[in-house]
Structures are given as C-alpha cells and as structure tokens.
Length: 347
Image (cartoon, rainbow, N blue to C red):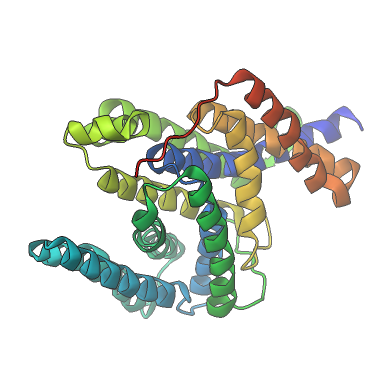
C-alpha cells in the first residue's frame, strides 16, 4: 500500500463514515429520549434512496402507499386509545396529526410529480415522503410499550426491521438503484482528487451536527428533549410530555435518515434490504460513544467508515467481519468502564 492509495482510502472512509455518523447521531438521539435502539433507522435511509430513484424515473414511489397505510393504522390506534382514556375531545387534533398531515404530504407529492419537477424539488419530495414514517411507527409499535424494558424494546425493534424489509420488497421491488450524483464538481486535496459528492457528504454531516448542537443547547424544545433523556419522571413533573418529546425525536431521526439515504444513493447501489448493514455499522459507531454522546457517536462512525475502507482494500470478502469484530473489544471496554445497576420495572 502506497501513501497515495492510503490517502484515497482515507478520504473514501471519511465520506462513508460521515453517512454512518448521521445515522449514528440519529440512533443516539432516539435512544436517549425514548430508550429505543431504533434498528429500522437504516431501512428508512434505504427507502429514501429508493424513493428518490423512483422520482427520478418519473414514477410515484411506493413510499406514498406505505405512508398512507401507516397513517391509517396510527389513526385507528390513537382513536382506540382516546376512547379508552375518555379523552375524545382530543380526537380532532389526533386526526390532524396522524391522518390529515401524512395524507396531505402524499397528495402534495403526487400532484407535484405530475409537473415533472427539477432535481431540487425531487429531493424535497423524497424527504417529505420519508419523514412521517418514523413518528408513525413510533405511534403504532413503540408507544404502547413505552414503559417496557430496554430488552423488550430492542426485540420489538428487530422484529420491526424484518417487517419493514418485507414491506420494502412489496412496495419497491427487488431491483437495486443508484441515483445520479448531486454535483459533478471535484477538487484536489493533498494530491488526491475528491469528488463533489464526497464533499457534500462530509459537509452535510458537519452541518447537521452543528444544527443539533444549536437545537439542544439554545432552543426550548431541544432542552425539553435533553430533560426527557436525563430523567423521564422528572420531565413529567416539570410539565414535559415524554410522548411528545419522543415524536419530535423520531421526526428529527427520520429526517436525518432521509438525508443519509439521499447522500449514499449516488455512491452505492441500494436495495430494499440494504438498510440493515448501514444501520448496524452506524450502531457500532454509536456504541463507541456509549449511546449517549453525539460527538462520540460521530467520531466512532467515522472511524468505522475508515476501518471499512482499509479492510475492503485488504480483503473485500472479510470487510464486514472486520468491522463487526470491533464490537467485541468495545463492548468489553464499555462493560468494564461503566457502572451497572439492575433495571427497575414499575408495575
């Protein structure tokens, strides 16, 4: 391996790691607020890439039908929940957020597609269609068991991933897609040619990390999410609703997954089941940060991307084995360095 090859591999690894960083930060965000290790995060990123490819091909994506089905299920569950609690006065608000808004997004996307929109509009449409998925899944799957143990939530999250893989095959088909690069610009850095797509990926990761920092430190909503992450019971006593905080976390996470999918689509062929490896590698990076630190998760994800890049050069068949083997020493280190306490389950 020469220095030039090492530089190329490092730049490629940083670009891949930047995508993993977005997914890792979103995973940590959802986990700290809701205690859910959201395994389907990578699936949403893959669905975004498939959605954008369908829009580029002038076809309305299956994401629209998926959102409609999830919206109807979430609305039905919310209506039953309000009836049992005797709070039917909240029904109009529930119908607006769980049914009217998602259907309006799908309808707007369908109408816009008939006008053959430019690339920038197609990107916005892909993000609009994908953003409601995570909050709707939260209402359907996770909120009814929000007080369960972390192990139960993880088990359900894994089961949800496999369900979404099946739905992805149903709505998107088995064909892989790769979209056109978002820019054709390129530049030379340290003697190595760096594509504009790579620069976009790194810039997006930095921008989102900065925006999350500003959001959590300088906005009231961000501070309420941090309070929920620190102490759910205490946040309730201060008038913060953990369910609403969870919805906001899922919205932000879904948006970040969408951006990740858009960025990775031009550089990798994406299939309906490609999201699992994306999410799992990002999860390895999140583990480095202890599932609590956003900078730690971002640094760990970039490290995973660089390791994967060099591992693929040495042995492409064993690159995933090398990356996932990193989990073993990290988990041992985290286990020895962390204080343990028995999880208390309130009856």
